[in-house]
Length: 256
Image 1 (cartoon, rainbow, N blue to C red):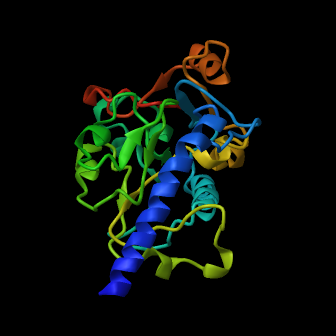
Image 2 (cartoon, rainbow, N blue to C red):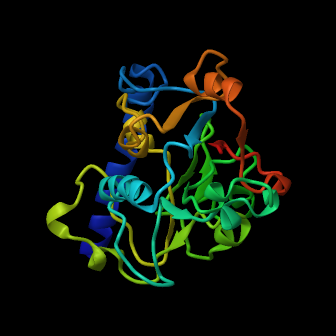
Image 3 (tube, helix red, strand yellow):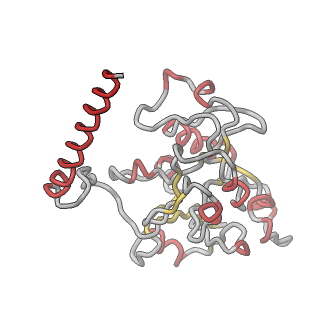
């Protein structure tokens, strides 16, 4: 009993000392986080993407982009209904079900279209998440905090685009451990994951992996900057977005 009391008093003293030092440390840092942003980091008030499907429209081309994305983000390879995906492909009818046009060129109907999280301006997934594990950043990116995810999958039900995947099993068992990217965390069973617009690459001045691998077929930039490349493409090309009647305001645009 005496040892327990002595240990408790000792720990309490350490905690009190920490509380006394913390304000001083905070004051010495000017009230800001001691972690400094990379000066090469890319910034925007609303990141957006334009995909030119006249340049990128085959299953093989899209699979190449998915491979680049999944390798960097340690996405497990699982086949079947338990598949985990950040970037994938689908047909016109499934991609744009509300914009079916029988007079479109037959070639358009036979194209494959790259799909990913739309990082909506009005994301329903954020509204329904009970733990705020999914949230919208100031730059418009809809992000995930894997440690706060309780696996309720409300966000999956709220997303009208099927852009989220659930880890039914242990994802690390489906990864080649010899090829893991040590700069990005692996996930655990029971959490949801999805495309994050490569926030970790933006922070160090790099474009998203899929954009780099697309060789010009994908453009990325600040939607609110009239001088950005994204805005330039949107002015010059006719684009459509997925399921516009959902009211989510997707930030991924498609040149058809």
